[in-house]
Image 1: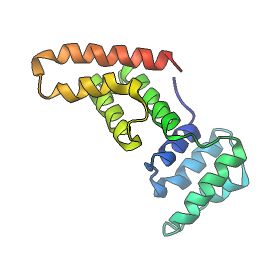
Image 2: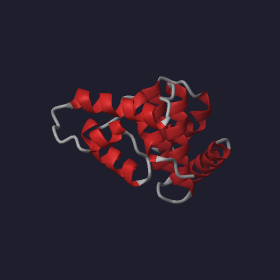
Image 3: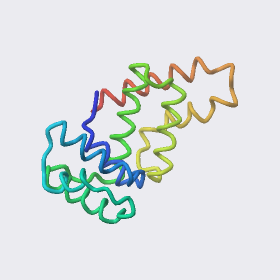
Image 4: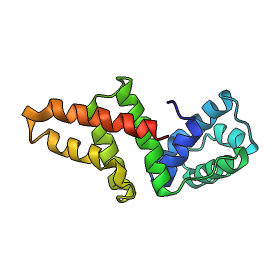
Length: 151
């Protein structure tokens, strides 16, 4: 389940995880994927890395222009968690690495998605209970399957 670049970046933006210096590259990639808007073109051409406010303004404007609404915090954390869970299922992340990333997302979002609690529990117990790691890996994979299946 590969999410579109601008959806992912809009979720990162809402959670305060946007790397402003990456936004011109994000805009250029979005243009190459078929998105087009005056804001995206201006953002892709932005070369003044001291213009963080301008980059953020253009990014928000670009999302509106291409019809991608900013998600609320809950939607944002779930979108990013689903993307991470899909990467666990395809082997791009280990279960522990993916579970830990999802746990970190919940901390940033302020606990707005209790359905992510299985990732938090398994990841938080991983270090303290090395004999049970196989159990935690299975739990994270199962939670990932459930989360990706819900989308």
